[in-house]
Image (cartoon, rainbow, N blue to C red; front, side, top):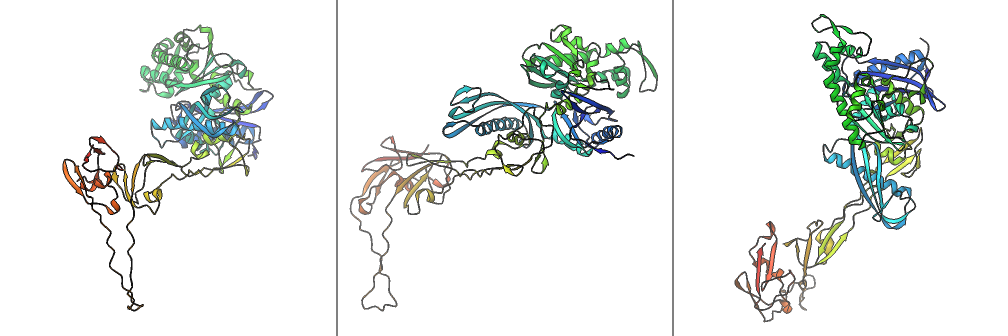
Length: 628
């Protein structure tokens, strides 16, 4: 066997991993079109895909390898890099908003906008995870900024405007991590490296509806075996995509039930509907030869075809908001006799405005020896066209921390885009300042700021780069996530100082000086004069080597007791040293309340009026200390 040549840089290899089959396309760009050199298709021997998603990775990988080897043998080329597309079944779309406040009013640069959009996308991802399994990794497919605001004023573009408060609302679309990872795993099983990834509905649109036609409001419907993917365009760009869970397999299963045939035979019967024969010959599961009239088959599939047309119309109207100007049907299911008319009826459109895709393929792709104008080629050709004609700027290999980065999006890719597409969040990219500690101390609000974040390391080809930097083919990205700053923390000793002497209440309960404070705590203090230090005296005739401590000096006690009423009972308080006043805090130990195990707030009243802990008591005051 002749030695295979290496895959040239401009040689595009695309694989469409479908529910029923794997289709490979090889080509290279020729001006503004893609020249297809070869096409290969192989069907799964048994079900390895479930509704467009890979179920058996080894089987899918083996079939992809078979398709690849057949193409390699005919072309004499070792195919190593492949472009693929993910099914749209598991797409999740979510709105997200984010606010970025700058330290001062300034001109808005690309870096602030990148950080703002990254925060909004992370908020959208967080909202999705809040609805389900928070541990489920989501990969960003793409997002659109719905609205910017600068200092509360709506804007279409923030760059170079001056302000301080930036806001962005985005609509972001994600794929669950398992969908992406299974596709990558199947390609590794086939010995292939993923060079680019897009979505099947976008790929099909790139084949069936060239960019110059997208000023019109058009719908692209790709009817596969397991899923029906839908994309819509307007004003020159794709404005939405969705999917329907009804597809070609439902029609096949209806034939199985009606005529007692296996799945493979039912597929053959379905494909024979449009032939010129009036009778279809087949063998049923009992081993009996059957001659089935085409009219009987058509009657048997009316139910699932109605459901399919209903689902297509419903999804188009839901995403588009109204009936589009025209609809293109692609995929193997689009060839079902009568389906085009049913879709037109459900959308209340002229039948002429619903067409089978294929006629426009030649605007973007051609071949010297292969018939390409088949609706089932929409997705495989679309993947190849997208990569070969630069409709996906991600049709190249970019490494992130030594591994191939997962890339989805149309258009120019920045570092911010790649990080978000590969599962990093706003916090990983920008970092978060540690949480502040907010306290109320003796009626005054005090805020202690958390520590600043340690910035992320972001390099392209070993040089520092901003988030807004555009990434090119072959770039090597190194990213070390930012580390969040430590939250602010204080104990009572750290708050009041080591020299504080007195009594402290935290949230109406006595507290020790090693109490760790939390945001929202209310601290009340009563500073007191510390007791005088004990004095030592030495007798003149005593030996100096053995001094003796004198008896402690008793504090002077002056007359002037304070007589009050506490919770209805009389209480006499002895005079304090230096005639210092008594405060409400001094009475807590007389109240009979267990302050170590409080489950309610404490209410303090003096003469029927609510007072604070630092209220100075007067003779004959009537005090009430109760649980609220």
